[in-house]
Amino acid sequence: GKGKYPFYMEKEIMEQPDALRATMQSRVVNGKIDLSADGVPDEILKDCERVCVVACGTAMHAGLVAKALVQSKLGMHMNVEYASEFMYSDPVIDEKTLVLAISQSGETIDTLEALKYARKKGAKSVAVINVKGSSIARESDYVMYTVAGPEIAVASTKAYTTQLMALFLLVGRMAKVRGIFDDATEKAYLDSLTKAPDKMQEVLDQKHDIHKIAREMLDAKDAFMIGRGLDYSILLEGALKLKEISYIHTEAYASGELKHGTIALITENTPVVATVTQSKLKEKELSNIREVQSRGASVVVFVKEDFDLADAEYADVFELPAMEDEFMVFPASAALQLLAYYVSMDKGLDVDKPRNLAKVVTVE
Ligand code: M6R
Image (cartoon, rainbow, N blue to C red; front, side, top):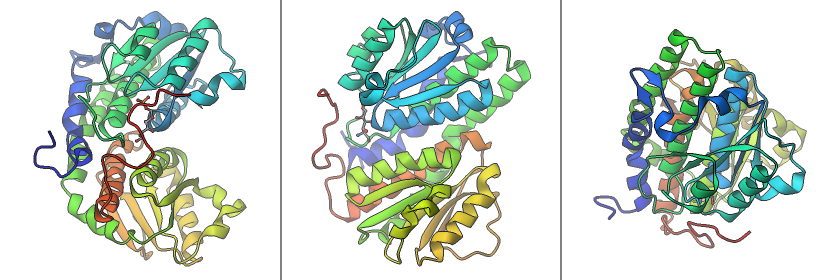
């Protein structure tokens, strides 16, 4: 049941620190990443030349975060495709391709079909799945199960962050077997990853502050979420969450691209949410925020706590507990999930069962 919570979504948001720990637990042995319990052989992680994600919705957004990591840590090219588009794009797939199929339910037909297509072309596959024994799990060469427990709310929360955890572990192992991480680098990486549940908890403990921010958005017809790089990937998921349960039309936008057309839509009635969590992007993101402010938009900023915002004025500022930049997705996601949750709840909507949507999508 929902326990003390009014909706499953809130319960599932709150369960995330434990779900992250559980997903990590069996895969860290004597302080090292070990995927042998999953049966994922080191050879396929070592020998692949390309990595490709096929997934839908939230699971696809988890793939985008993994892409940033694969490119920065492994220096390898990676594609992330909507599963429904994958096979119609004549994807370049061969025996040297590692396909990652990511799915909470393991039953999404588009993801299943994309995986079958890739395997026919000779790709090796690892599926990241929450539901044991599901169709995608059975179709894939190897499976890493997320330990999120059942996710009932249509809007995915703990499935997403446990997918991220599994993917961070997979990329960490790849870096090790490819000789990119030595023991010390692996240890530092794991130390940061181990902190993710606690940093998320710090955000969850401040849920009332996020509730206050949500109250300012109830009347919005349209909203924007702007950022660059990993912030943009995080916001694509944040915007999907807000759209699907609050029915506010929300666009996540790469903030540097706004001035090439879309900024025409920004007025005083368009709330803008920005995340600022990446050192190398901070100054450019802040300047993009000033651009929308000068069109009258009120901007709420979710900022990594040790970044200095100088004395700029924002509608609201929420400080995210600091981690190494690439791990900031964990605390930032918790904040954006809570934002969507409270907007939906305060609008009196059915948070767990938004209109037109099903938890499992078995039509193409
Ligand atoms: O079960 P799956 O992870 O394969 O589902 C994929 C999407 O349908 C799913 O993530 C959807 O986008 C969620 N409702 C988002 O909250």
